[in-house]
Image 1 (tube, helix red, strand yellow):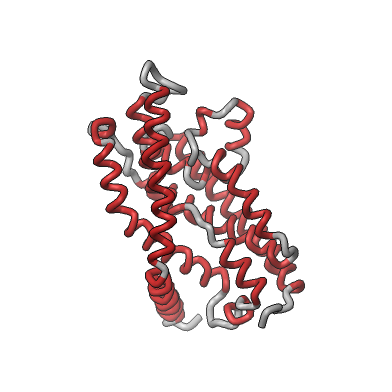
Image 2 (tube, rainbow, N blue to C red):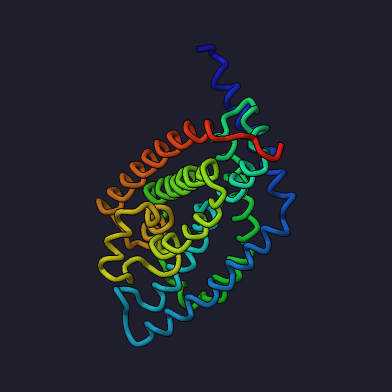
Length: 271
């Protein structure tokens, strides 16, 4: 292996990331629209559960706990949750995919940096809005203690990777069917419920709570959020991190299988 190969690879990644940042910035208006849609539940959901918990705790959550949970989930999901399948499906359907796979970088790597740039730009633009929301709820979170340990940051990185890889695998369904968009829409139902984005997983019925621990959704945003606010600690947090890694590997294997077989079906329609 040439000694300068790692440097060449890094430069290639850096160049792709830079181009992706420029493309993300070019779509500031659409990003702002998505951010506004995030602000509405961020303002309302804490109020709903805070009111419900005003006379006591619900599943171990007090009023302050609910507010802290939703604010933490809101911020983390901006970085972790990937929605790249829509773009990839459109590229496959329109034939733009043909150009992408001819580039001197794998499509998986290209998509990873495109997604990463979008996530970083989004969280940077969202941060001022988030600070205003946090200021609105300051009376509930003023004494909050956050766990910013290594396990938290690792779980965030793994949650982001898991969301990306699983979405990449799902997006390749566009190779096999014209109705992939319908599948993507169905995906959001279980994803929102079982990832903890609508409400903490511990509030679910026992069967649904058990199901959430057998599916990957909870290990994207739910685990990092609960580690951050101190609901997952020690060995329990470590076990969840192990499961995150297992799901990443499993999702990548599924991606490779669909990729290999999907290329045989691809005809470049639209070119």
